[in-house]
Structures are given as C-alpha cells and as structure tokens.
Amino acid sequence: MTSAFSMAPLFRHSVGFDRFNDLFESALRQDSATSYPPYNVEKHGDDQYRIVVAAAGFQEEDLELQVEKGVLTVSGGKRDKTAESVTYLHQGIAQRAFKLSFRLADHIEVKNAALVNGLLNIDLLRLVPEEAKAKRIPIGAQSVLSH
Image (cartoon, rainbow, N blue to C red):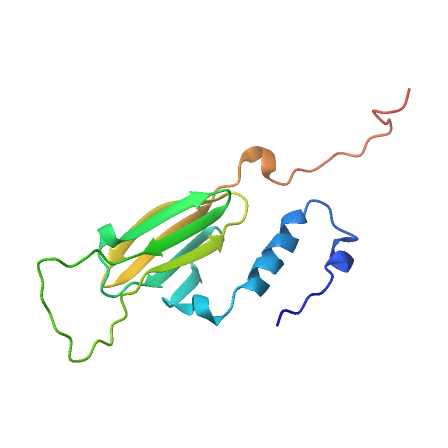
C-alpha cells in the first residue's frame, strides 16, 4: 500500500527544488527489502561524509561502485566458487547479491573507497565551486533595468 501526498505546499515559496519531489517519491517506493546489507551514513565534518556498508564475505573484486546522474550505486555479488567444495552445516553470513543506491546532493563527489575488515568505506566530499558559493549583492541607487 502506497501513501501518496502532495508536495505542492512545500514548493510554493521555493525555487529550484524540483529534485526534492523525486527524492521523496523514491524514498517512499523503497521498503524494508532494501535493508541488506546494513549500512551507515556518517558526517565527519561540514563537507565530509562516509557511507559504511557491511560487506562481510565479499572481496574487492566482488563489489562495484558507480556514480551516474547524481546517484551512487553500490552493488555486490559473489563469484562462483569452482575450487572449493564446501558443505555448510550452518551458513549465517549472507553472501547474496545486493544493490544499494544513494542520491548525492549537488557538488558531492566520491573521493575514496576501501574495503577494511569486511566494511566498505566510501568517503564523500562536498566541493562547492566558487560560482556556487553565497555572495553579497550590493544595493545601489540605480537599477540596471531602468532606462
């Protein structure tokens, strides 16, 4: 069951936030099935972030990161084991394929990714270009548009 609601009241006094509607809609579509593998989203400073994905049992070659149109996709899948003939008496470490997607805000870039002790650490950094930073607008007596 999906609960739909109008975002129109939020956009009455805002300009350029068109992507927010897409963000909320995609959040509503996702359900508890996307909880594997578990992950954390951490803030380490004003412009530094880290996504930590629990990737127990995966190796670097089993994981793939991709950024396209402002969406970071993390996917993993186990390679076929041909050399091992193991019979599991109990298999509690899930090694099933997964795909996680994270929508990145403007000017967020992936700086580094490393697999350490079964945790995939993805470091992100906000790099705001000079032209996108806030600037003070002087108020003068004459308008540019007046003739």
